[in-house]
Length: 243
Length: 243
Image (cartoon, rainbow over all chains, first blue to last red; front, top):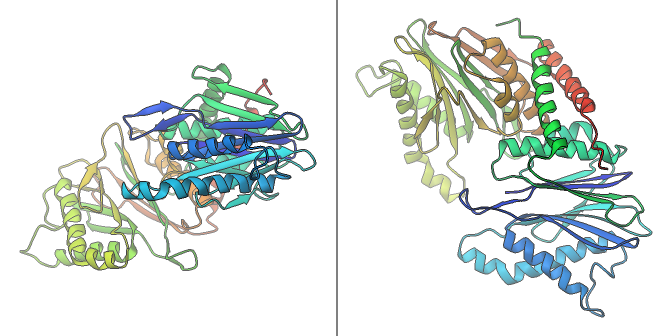
């Protein structure tokens, strides 16, 4: 399983991904789910993937391969805007589907790959997309400024409560980490390290990429304080007087 | 969809269920999911159901019908202990499966019914079971003293953090309501009113059955205070200094 969340703010993009991959519960590995393609200062793309690892790796490989064909099809280095970039990602997903879906079907394996694409191309604001296994996609808007893929439910309530478009990057990253903490506690197949990538508006490059390893001091502090605060907040609620 | 949670404490049982049923998102109704069978002072059973409503109603009907056959098969009025009661519920589920599963299969409808059974028969402590669609079941233990069915993920973290076997009934009911609040906020197909049933240890009867309707003052208070406390707790967490 996987948990990734991408947030689009006025101040830029904040993208978080866990790094646990599992085939069953007895075969757990660490694979990075964040992939960056950039021409710093001109364009930047951050992709986060969930689903079948062989499929997501294939999609990412096709996107990289396409960069090497100078006069070929549209690729992430030559598209004019983020909408076209999302189409590139959708088309790569469809190419993998054409190649692999029937063979997987024979083994009753679902064609399962989801991708969050965030980024900015100079001349446009930053944009955020959720690309589905069928290669179609939706874009984040003013009202819904984040996407989650993978094991999203445990970590959704806190994002809903505190992340808005005008949030600072720090606040969004903090919310992402609290959300990740709730998910890691509840689902064994989501695990550390956690990648946290930020893209500040109009920098058109990765502004920071931090890898939070087990034992990270700040994340430990957040986990403990959040847990204590929840328990205290619960204690402070009045008991039902009808029992 | 549905959300039900049953908790087994030293002090007794606390069982909560929402009451929304939906066939698609455009056909939403209110059906009670809590069913009580008791001989007050001697034995009490509280059943909560999730899954296909036609199936759960059929299981409950069979359990009631069996009570009317005085010298017949084991039923909830004559079984000697809660383990045998859980077998009755499992057998009724299997009887419905034999009758309905093939016809549902023809319409690609899954045989989907889950039941939480809590109760006490005089001479035993209160016990709590989770009965699966196949009619098999598991029992709550010292380490894991609660079961959830239906849309369980949003409301699981708070139960995990605050409910232990030695909790008072009031505390468990409060935790159940906070858990229900998180679920109702996140999933449109879980909705009010909420049934809250308690069974105090050794009373062998329903000790209280409260129906929390929309506009309930206590539930409104819990919702608002919890929301405010979470937002405040989040604000109090230190921002990452590496951004």
